[in-house]
Length: 102
Image (cartoon, rainbow, N blue to C red; front, top):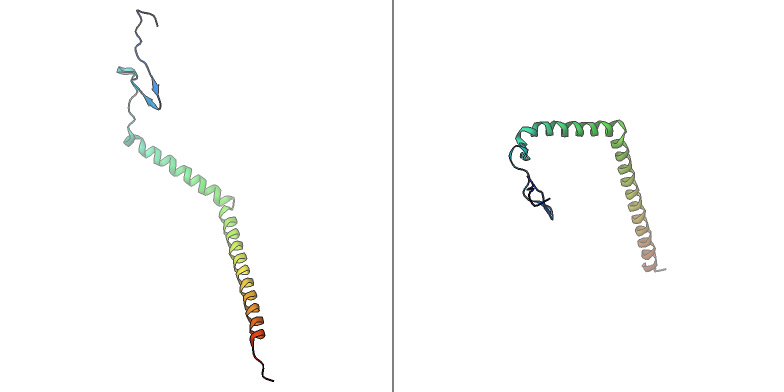
């Protein structure tokens, strides 16, 4: 900029703060949230519905249900096996401790 030229606007970025910007008819207008909210809700609803549709069509929920069932069955089998071993140990100790009077 020369000595005789004065800039109409300037933007300085300090950190994440934008300092003075354009004024007048070139100024950035603040968005009207209440006017755009219905459109935003409609777009979000459509995205959610599309995602649900894809998840149902690809069988995501079925796969998840089967995997969760397998995990539960595996955990139950491990638990049953553990308690069978505990019972066998208790019976073995009981046989060792029992006093026989013959």
